[in-house]
Image (tube, rainbow, N blue to C red):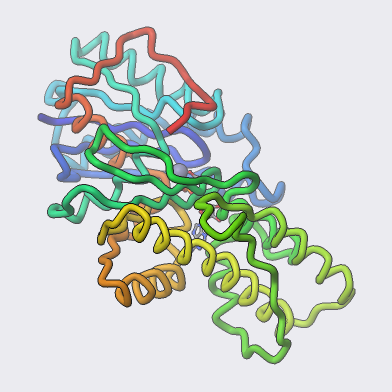
Length: 332
Ligand code: KG4
Ligand code: ZN
């Protein structure tokens, strides 16, 4: 089966051609440069960008896969959660293609697509496992028994961890998106200023998260300092990152212990963070747990994860139809 995967939930326009878990092509273009000066994604700008570029991105993906529209057997599209205008662009294209080509269309949950994105490169991961999705909009721990059977063990009660990275970067004047720049700046820290930010555990056995407190702690620290030199900025980035990642690592390992599983899958934009990869892999290895991360290009939003999950769900009997519409608050 050849599937066209379409992703337009936020600021990346992604189209991919997939077959099972195989990625024949994946093309992504991003409007991130247009949002930089606002310090976050502006929904109307993101939607207009999708409208302008989606056809070009689709044509590039088809060309790279050496397939034509007539070869497509299934159209998979993100139908939520996300920005409503942005989602509608991809959904409109998907439904038009489905009607014109007379092939089925299937709506895919964006958060679950991140959760299973490691499957694009890891072919032999057995169920059950604990899944951690860490993105700009979500921080969720899952228990996964099958590709269509997972439950939420815990999630953030306020900011997502990627959102905390973005807000801390804004406080420090480092620009948007915050994740990559904070990771890079933290590496330069010599640890001269012994800064410690609070870690929020929400209770000893809780698998929920809270990241708004640490963001506020950074804000108060910066206000107190008044003038920051570059060494201080690096130390703040490092202290923030270590505290935020420690909580993610500790709770993910705790989830494995509670559910008695030895496998973890991580997905979402923050899964690109090398410090998270190192810390989680090390902590998990101490308990004999194996961790799987997506390839870097599949951490951020892309059409390949949508195509692969869409096809897997279709094969399990899931169906959508032309009434498919955007669900900005779609739950995982
Ligand atoms: O998954 P994604 O592309 O979009 C959402 O579904 O939200 O994730 C974007 C988020 C942003 O908050 C960005 O700051 C964060 O992922 N991010 C990172 C890194 N690269 C992207 N966070 C930490 N370290 C990174 N290297
Ligand atoms: Zn995403």
